[in-house]
Image (tube, rainbow, N blue to C red; front, top):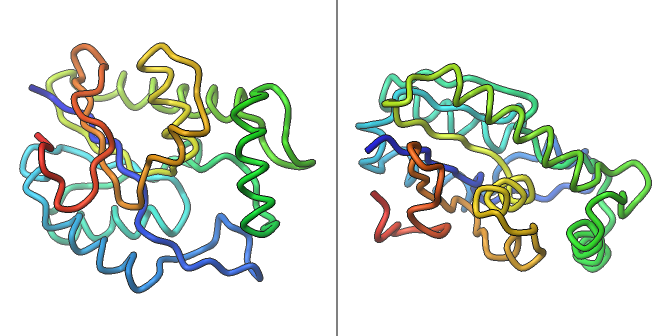
Length: 194
């Protein structure tokens, strides 16, 4: 069965001095990259797609080095655009508003949920249409756009609690034939992942 693996990037190193899109990985995140690259699922994956952000491209590069699987960077797979850090409490409140009012930007300059979801879905449609239906693929991206996309696949409104449940370095397996999730987002040791 061809599978689409949706993967959230590993733990980040929060750096308020940099835009969030430029944050790298923490030491824990670097260890998670090694764990991800060692998973047996790569034996069936023909290509890896990542966003343009360092926290995802690091995974693509590690998989390419370990398994000789090409990875492709697609900017439209980036996280919802919100580069300035506002602090943890304000961020949580903004995320709640982001999901509650999808057509409204919770903070001036932030991309709203409807726009982020449409951008990400278009990128995924392009990826899926350019690859043979029998191929298994992996997409390494970000929690907010993954929450939007997986809600779309399930035919339900996106919700804040869905975003909160996507752990760092979590993986969801999706049946490419039906585009329905086969698993929830799983973290190490990834028990139940096909």
